[in-house]
Image 1: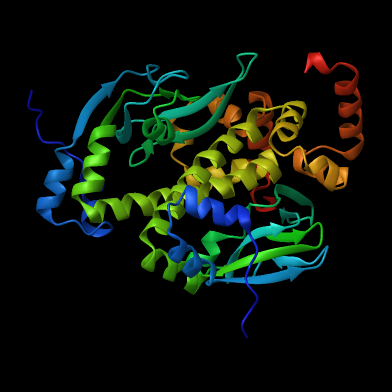
Image 2: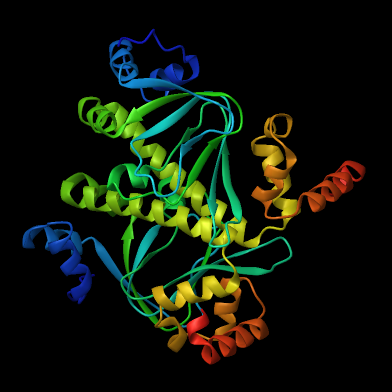
Length: 202
Length: 202
């Protein structure tokens, strides 16, 4: 089945301007992606699954979370347009994932399968470098996120999220943001009121 | 100044058996490392420094921590023998680090400078692959640590540390472990007593 051409100007611009791919290489890379629509509340990944693809968010919004032994959810991050989401470790090692990835809006994903990731890395050395650099940057970012998770107060975490992903606050229910911050929804409401009243104290 | 040959059987075994380096390549890699002794309580890295080298712990024990705006310490991890420690991001980007790395015992580090890391990556492709794989694995591990930091209880974190780095409990003061777990030293003592009394409940 031949899919219609994928419309993804942001990804294409990145491949051109950051990865340095030629127009021909971009076409060849884009032909490795498969479009997938996912309904609101549907899961792209469930704990126990072995990942078959990583997903570029072309449109929509998803959350990644884990469930502890008491079935309590903890949200680890949100993915909006132009984020990649999935579990690269499970994709590479073919071990079951521990993560859930769920659409919070009707979303359009562009899937890069394991086979096609390996193919892109092999056939497009500039893509491989781009991908490796991204993994490395994500690693630095994960280490900083770990520092923040361990040391920052909920208020500091809230302000950082406002700075990094302000669109989230227009798009998703606040109880998800509370779960991300590790506080109760009522505490988040109080925190928001306090910051609105004294914005310069924050 | 010529340094005497570095005695590091564990690192050499890894380079031989995991990285697949030949004896000649191992010699050439080892010649890039510089031995550095560091006294107990001395810092290998301080926030604001631009990192000049990453360090392999040949002997000893160090901790990595951050200070928040109220000068409160949060310990992110401990490095024992056969761990690498430092800030690869600061080393690569030459931006100041946010981390402190301090020796908890008199330690012997083997330093790989920025120049020598680049040289090893260029001249020893097998080392580059070994290093890239390590960064990737560390990334997966950092993501799991992030999940744990956000969702696990102090007791769960304690049990995990006991499993992963049991030697720590013989080597370092408990208040450091409490800081790592994000609890007060008194809470850690109570937690330990409870687990000793009811080991099968944990």
